[in-house]
Length: 178
Image (tube, rainbow, N blue to C red; front, side, top):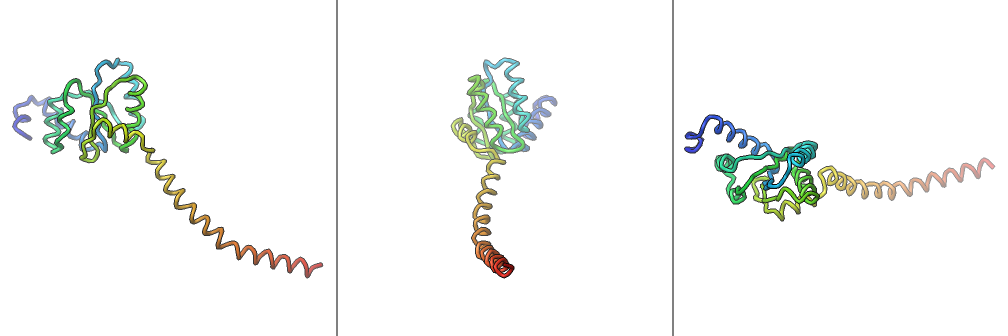
């Protein structure tokens, strides 16, 4: 723990440790300004994010700043101004961004500030680009389809001569029976 954590109250030290754990466990972290959001909107956003194994937390800037320093994630501190809400995504990187950006487009709140993805700092535009990517399952389906198509064609091409031989033998058998 750093000097600041030594001077902090025990509850604050625990909160810093909780934030640090969430940052380390998450695959994506998106910071947003939640000003103007109603309790109903926050509850709805949390419900949508929970389906994607993500969570929306309102955090204190100073405690988040200390947790980020302890982890060594520098550069994201510029987003720690004003009211701070953080989306932590635990399953994959794209779905929390999709849910948040879709919610923002519908309600015009919260305002995305930036975030981090695998220790890379994301600007607001980067988060929006990330939200436009297809979901993980869709990408896997495209890869499998891309692999399957040439293999299917190869099977059809190589089985063609064999099929013709079978037709020829059947034709010979039918002609001898007559």
